[in-house]
Length: 372
Image (cartoon, rainbow, N blue to C red; front, side):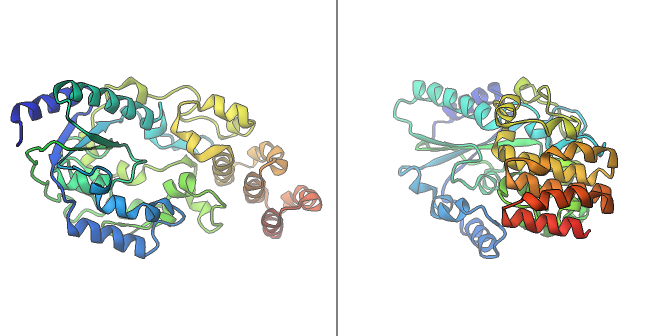
């Protein structure tokens, strides 16, 4: 039986904790959402994100995560700081959600505290919380709960907040009065599709992650395909292009959560300032940041590509130490960037690197870079 008074108290408590959008739903997830996810996987759009397939059943049937599942709380926590990202080709463009403290930690703490509050009122409650990393289809639940609609860029859009917010889901054994779904208000707009540098939005509401710059700079652990590197521009962790052009984000308001505001040394920093980071320096500079997910080798891979795209030959000298970096992933992308900046003038340094290189993939990259 639904406790309407408790549901209202829950809503108010979550808003007090910074979750400005609070909606409720009931299981099951629904056949349409399950089919859409299964079709997306069947097309291979997940790329190397094998974890999505491995825990597929839990995503499709959340009852396996919480046996007595009866109600779902879906939450939106804004992270927009009201600040622009950089367009300067010699500075690193970091997706705005990663400017501050890692959202997994911030929202995880808030959800743990809320669950303690809820147990104080309903000791019999059982919960399973998810913030992005859990095997939960957050966007599908957000649609079902009326938190917003799925935009053509595949992000959830709220009519009064846009799309700059994190999603969190709380599975519970308590029953809630469900909220009504939101109507799709994208209309004939295709700005997000048109702006995507790599054409990752292959059709309205369909994202091929293998082409998405966020995937390429964060989730992909190996080399970035050569044909996609020039399209990445100065983006070194994620990409906001499809959201920045969305008309609904004119309604976005700056978050009141201070943890999401830019920390020192992250936003709009000179690209070359990252190249000297060793493992310890990388961990120190980005401690508590989502950027750690890319690891040093992946992050410096991205930085090298961005430097290559800067079209500033004077930055080439800063790449020379990276040509002998301990990580093959960094060496190979540094070679590509070095040749992109200097052309034929890069050959002597690339020849020297080739003479001592033992990694087959880096040798291939050096050979291709030398050939121009």
